[in-house]
Length: 449
Image (cartoon, rainbow, N blue to C red):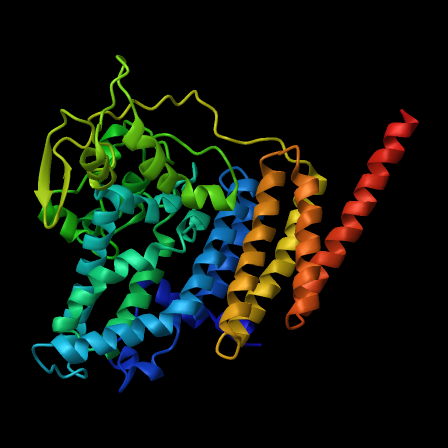
C-alpha cells in the first residue's frame, strides 16, 4: 500500500527540486522523510514503461543490469543511511562554528548550495583522483544514456562522497543536510535522457539533460566535464564546463568498455585495474611505467589516465591531467554496442525472477531495523548471487544454467539454517521448476531432430 501511495502524482515534483523551505525543514533528523525511498517507486515505474515504449534506447540486458545495480546501491544505503546521518550529527556537534536558525529560508538556501558544492567536489574527485574512480565507474559503464542509467550506481559510492559531505558540518545543521542530500540525488534522475534538447538560459545555471549528456560521453571533449548535481555554476566557476556540440554525436560509456552484464565484475573491474593492472603495465620496450614500490603506489592515486610524461595540475588535495583529452581515442561510431543474443525465453525468465527479487528487496527494506546484521549481509550476498545469474544469461555464458542451479542450492541451504523468507523460497523453487522444464523441452526437441 505504501508503494502505491508513493506513486501519487504530487510526488513527481521532487524530481525537479520543486519544494519549499517550510515543507522540507524539520525539528530533528528523525523526522526527515526518506525522499529517495518515496521516489524509488516512480523511478522504477518510469523505467519499466520506457522499457516497453522505447526498446531501442532501453535494451533489456542493459536496463536490467542498471536496475539491479540500483537495488544493490539502495540495499547498502539501507545499511548506512541512518549510520551516515548519525555520523554527520556527531561531527556537527563537535565542529560546527555557528548555530544557524534552521527555519530561516536563507539558511535553507545556504544548505542547498553547500550540498551541491559538496557533491560537485566529491563527484569531481571520483573522476580525477586515481582509484576513487572505481567507486563511480559503474555509473558510467552503460553504453546508453537513459533513466535506467541514472540508477546504475556503485554500492561503494556513498563511502567516498560522504567524506566531502562532512565538510558541511562546520556550518550546516543535520536537519537541513539530510533532506538536501536526498533531493540533490533525486534531481539527477530526470537529467539522464536524450529526448530534451538544450533548455536555453537554464543551461547557464542548472544541470540539464544537455550538459549531463556531455558528462556521460566518451568523446575526447566530454572527458571529465560537467560534474554538477543540480547547479552547473560550479563547473563554470572551476573551469570544468563543456557545452554539448550539435555537430558531434556523443558516444556513451567508458573509454574502454567492460563488455559484460556481470553485476559483480562491472562493480569491481576498475579496482582490479588500479590494484593489479596499471601498476604493472610496460612500454613497448618492456620497461615498467611505474617501477618500484613507491611508483606503483603513486600510480594508484595518480589521475585516472596518467602515465609518465603527462602534465598534471593540482586541485584541492589531488591532481588532475592538465589536458583532459590526452590519451583519449576518437570515437568510432561504427563499432557496435555490446549486445550478446538473448532468447525471449531467457528474457521472460529473468523478468519473472527479477520481479521476485524485487519482493526480496522490499522484504529486506521492511525488516531492516529488526533484521540481524548476519542475516542482512547473507541475504545481500544472495541478492548478488541471483543478480549474477541474470548477468550470465545476458552475457550468453556457457555455464549460466549450471551457475543458476548452484544459486538455487545456496538459497535452500540458507533457508534451512537461517530465518525463513517466502520470497527467497519462491525464487529457488520457481527457478528450479522452470530450469527443469526448459532442459526437458530442449532434450525433447533434440531427440526429435
